[in-house]
Image 1: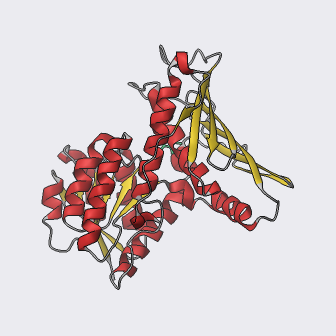
Image 2: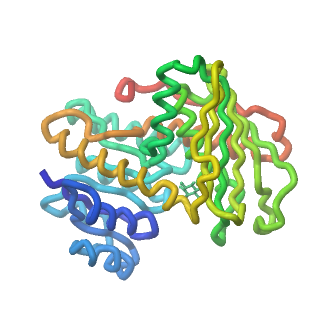
Amino acid sequence: MTVNIAVIGAGRMGADHVRRLHQDIRGAAVAAVVDVDFGRAHQAAAPAGAPALESLSEALALDHLDAVLIATPGFLHEQALAQVLERGLPVLCEKPLTPDAASAWRVIQAEREQAEKNQGRRLIQVGFMRRFDAGYRQLKREIDSGSLGCLLMLHCVHRNPGTPSGFTEQMLIHDSVVHEFDVIRFLTGQEISTVQVRRGRGSSFAPGGISDPQQVLIETEGGVLVDVEIFVNAQYGYEASTQAVFENGVRSIGVGEVTPGFAERFGAAYDAELQAWVDAVAKAADGGHPVAGPTAWDGYATAACCEAGVAAQIPRRSHEAVPVVLADKPELYR
Ligand code: ISE
């Protein structure tokens, strides 16, 4: 079966996904590319031989549409997800699911309502691509195997070469540390219970008013302590690494792997993520969830972590471990 996919948003991520679906992913075809900027939609769609459209509604009206990939800015996701769920289609939604926990929870409610009508199927996968990176997967296998004993601590480094104009201090958390929140939850299999942020000496390369780098201190519900250095004006390149400390040894991934940006560092992970999703959508035609990775629950839980992280950035709270508040996990995600 060929999975016909409408890509919503033809910015950097959306255009990259169109190219990927067209050239690299088996069993996928681009059914349409949607962007409010029609020229931009056309530019991304033309090489894939797909029509360019100006609205999601037009795409959802297409006859042969099997799935939707949302790559618009995060604040537009809730509305788009509601429309796609209403049509009962599988959807891969780029991170973040939504910008805050309350809206992410509304998405969960909408997905649950849809699941009730639809044999209890989940429809949403969230684009946390690191879960498809070979290094993170290997580390997860090692943690789960227990071969080095119990996991005690994680030391994470997340560096971007620079920031685009309009970048705000909260975006250190929402745009970048959100990946660490997800990967910590993925590696440990535990929810995060508290987040603390410390600011020290800042780089003179950081745009006015932004304190960069920052140290984010995290504790999981099982007592795994994590420190994250987030540094988004590191100049020299992009680097994402994790060192895992066990009772009986240490494992590191990504240390010294410097690329121009995240697209190069995680290119293979994006390929694997899209292939797994397309395969799951094709397989779900015979029953099962059309989802092969992080769910709307993961999107909600990381949104709650981001809220705690942004609260912890407030200077007067810099010595406070701010609790992450989560609702009970619904049956659909257990
Ligand atoms: C960017 O938006 C991403 O999602 C990358 O994966 C992340 O590493 C980077 O820090 C963000 O700016």
